[in-house]
Amino acid sequence: MKTLEKRTDIILESSIDTIDKLQKICQLLYDEIDYYNWVGFYFKNGDKDELKLGPYVGAATDHIIIPFGKGICGQVAVSNETFMVQDVNEQDNYLSCSIDTKSEIVVPIFKNGNNIGQIDIDSHKINPFTLDDRTFLENLCEKLGLLL
Ligand code: SME
Image 1 (cartoon, rainbow, N blue to C red):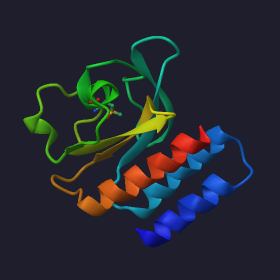
Image 2 (cartoon, rainbow, N blue to C red; image 1 turned 90 degrees about the vertical axis):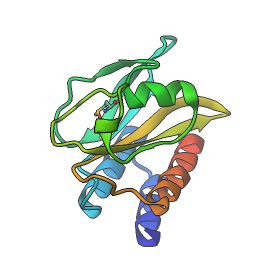
Image 3 (cartoon, helix red, strand yellow; image 1 turned 180 degrees about the vertical axis):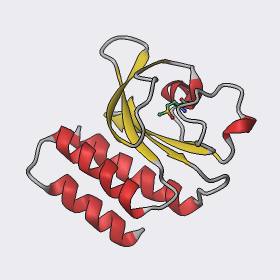
Image 4 (cartoon, rainbow, N blue to C red; image 1 turned 120 degrees about the vertical axis):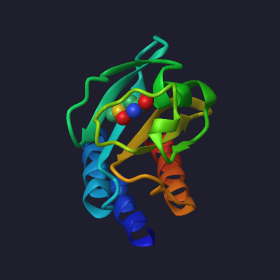
């Protein structure tokens, strides 16, 4: 995770557009961590109480817009807390993107204390996420909050 953190730092500090940084981060995490099988960003859609899909890598999803409160992502938009779901079958309030997805972690991004979006990672494995994933992703989202 340390090496990966260095590589995300290099992307964040590069002079490319923000949207390209987000896309490159998705690609890097998708390529480097075998149990990250969909990596993407959702952001608050203007003044609306909904999330809109941003850059992502993985299978196309039907969930371009997610109302606040709906699914794992929509819950994080209102709870302001990381949501680590080790088995999506145990969640009632879950929006399925792919039948292959078994688990998911969503980490909010704060800008000036406001929850502006999140990184969402789906895995094809049950129970894959550790505290290291959580810490790595929370650190990343903290840096993204300063950048966005
Ligand atoms: N599973 C998410 C929806 C987004 S997809 O995973 C890309 C949810 O329950 O909010």
